[in-house]
Each structure stands twice: as C-alpha cells, then as structure tokens.
Length: 523
Image (tube, rainbow, N blue to C red; front, side, top):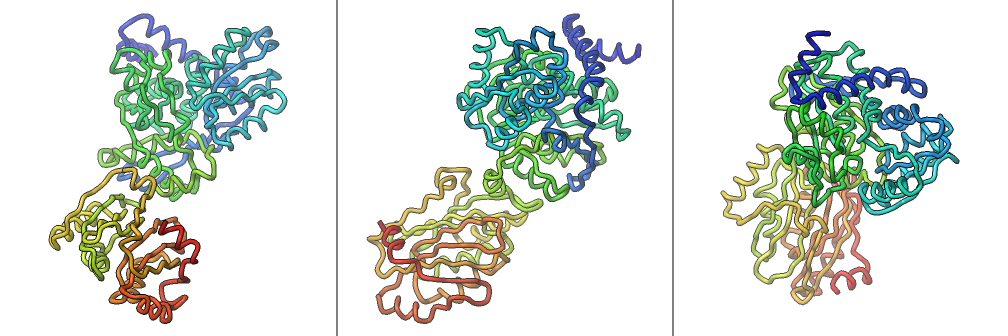
C-alpha cells in the first residue's frame, strides 16, 4: 500500500487533488456494499478481430437497465438523509441515468422528478416509466441534455429538492466505478490499455482511478465523439469550458461541458484523448453485432470505436473496453447500418463526369467498378452534353485505390465527396425538358455481386439512354432501384416495353412506374 500511495502522490500537483482522489477511492470501497443490493456484477467477455489485440468487453448492456448508470444513481440515493428522502429528488438525463434514478427511486421508496430532452429515444422514456412506476414523474424539456439539466437545476433550487447529478457527484462517480472493481476481480487483468468513453466524465474518472490503483502501468484512453469532445477541450483550457456546437448522434454522451469533479480526476489520469466519428461508432456497433450478437447504443460503442481506430498500434496488447449501454430506438438501426461498410471495407463517394450519350453509363460501370460494392447510385439528367452520376462505393483501401487508378487510366474526370447535402438528402435533379420518350422502371434485384450491372447490360445496352437512377443499399437480400431510360421515339419506347421481362436471372421483378408517379417525378 505504501508503494501504491507514493505512485498516486506523484500523479497530482496539489493536496486538494490528492484529497479528491482519496475520497473517490474510499467511496468506491463503500459503493461495493451498496450497489449489489439491487443487481449482480456484469460479465467480461472477449471479442475477436480487433487487429491483433486481445480485447475484453465489460458487458454493461446486460445490467438491470441495459446500461451502467444504475450503479452511480443507486449509490448516491442510498445515502440520502431521511429528510431528503421525504422531499424527493430531481435529476436530468439523456436517458440511461434517468433509468438508474427510476430504479433506485422504486427500490428505496423515494419520489423522483426526471427531466429529459424531448429528443430522448422512446425506448428510454418507456423504460424510465416502467422502472420507476408511480414514484417517477417525467418532464420532457428542451432539445438537449443541457437544456433539460438547466431546467431541472432551476426547479431543484426553487423547491429545495436534492439534485442527483448524472456525473458531477463523488458518490455517483464511485458507484459507476464498481464496474472497474468487477474487472479487477475477474482475474483477466492486468490490462495494457483501456478505452473509456466520455460524456460528462463521471464513469471515465471513476473507472480510471480504480484501474490505475491496481494496474499502475495501464494506458487510459479517453474516447469522445465528433462534436462532443468536452473533456479534451477542458484539459486544453485548464478548466471545463462550454462547447459552442454539440453533435447528438451519440446521445448518451452529448454533454456540452465536462463535469468539474470528473475534470479534476481525468486531467491527470487520462493519458490520451481520441475523437471518433459517427461512422466509426456505427462500425463499432456492427462489430458488436457481428462478433458478440449484442446491440449497442451509439455511446455504448464509443470505447470499441476508439480501439478500432487505433487497432494498428495494439498488437499483442491486452485491451479493455466498456459496452456501457444498449438503449437504442429500433428506428435508428437503419441509419446506423447505412453508415457502415462490411468488415475492413470503407466507404467513399465518387462524382464522375461522362458524356451524356447512350451506353456511356454502362461503359463506366465496366471500366471502373469491378470488385467493389455500389452502396448508392444517384443520377438525374440535367445537362444535354455532360452527365455527373454520384456513386457511393465500399471496398478495402486497396480496392478503392484500384477504382481511382482505373478512372484515371480511362480518362474520367472525378471527385471524391464527403457528407454533402447531395449525399445526405439524396438529391436527384431531373430536367424533363431534356427528355423525349422517357420510361421509368421499378426494379427489384438480388443483392449479389454483379447482379445489377448484369441486368442493366443485358436489358438496356443499345436500347436507350439512362436519364435517371436512384438506388441505395438497404441491407436486405433484395435491392430496389428506380431507373429512368429515355428513347429517341415513342415507337422505340413501346418496342422496349413489349420485350421487357417482368422477372428473370438476377432480378425478382421489373415493372413500369405508374403514370401518376411518372408525371409527379417529371414535375
């Protein structure tokens, strides 16, 4: 213990900091006895395929509220005075802390008013009501956690209700850190690296303090989301600062300003900060599903996203990540699935210039897209001489470079795009005045390599010119595309229709778009 004490003394510059760390560590010891009154420890499970690292996942997604927040909320409320219990408590939360407070309120017989943003996923709102029953009153306020927090703090002061903070409270931090105590007691350590997601910083502070106690050489990486890096900003400024903008894709960590107490711990115990993109978080959610058959909410997957981002430097390392929550609205899954590739594949958007003439689109497909997956394809004729179709494609970096080289070798002018409005909103402009005898087809084809290209080549080549294309990969076994073909005469259009097969090799159905929909599409 003497050596351990000296180790921690050297980490801090002031007696005040040392006192805070001492109190936090003591609080974790006492929290051990409290939190297991209402729940059991969660397992530590290995996940394969993260580079050449040995990665273990702390499965907080299978806790009583499908997230770790019950630990801190219950630990704080278990030490309420009798007067505080009679008055009741109030809190604000993006969802998971609210469930923890609701669970504790029901278990301890304490009334709780819970403010939540209006954007809180319904699955979390319903869970709060179910867990707390008649003990809980939910107030939806504002569009972010900060809006809800401001309103709840005002009511707390006005009505003299104890505010149970989601992260900026020593007892809350100590309770959350019991997940790290379970890691230590598992016998799977020591670990070389731990990736801890950060919102307000309570979990990261508590867990880092406990891991550093038992694994002094562990490297702690704080993981924050794009547009949410409040702790990194606080460390850079020397104090918590308010972010001017806040991304809420990872809603559970969408905190504009890091907590004061977590900052005092994190500034010295977090060895490195990384920022992960929404795409990387979505990829981590996919990895959890593929490897463990578990579903994480975005914030819950941020730790794994950090490890995935740095996988090249983790060779032969023992790595810890925390799957800290699984409370996600089902309706968000389609958006998340649309963000990811497959395995080690990445996505890129290409806008390519081709002559506006018959056969040029099919020639492009054959020239450049061999061996890559087309995730989206959008084009509308709006120039008589030049077409600029937009493709979203996936592949390894090596395959994407082959696409670039093929385009250059064939003389195509192209540009790679980020998340532009055209991509985000699937804008497909179409000028009907440039069309002569258009036909629009509703096509369903089997999602396998080459099926769409084969159909287009065998059915369209030499019969007309593409004037419209709208397709996006949905993850289903059958893909759907709306295709427009323009003919030089009405007779050619009628002859094509007469020969058109309604089903065949590689496609399930093909039918002309109805007259009303066609007129609407052409304005």
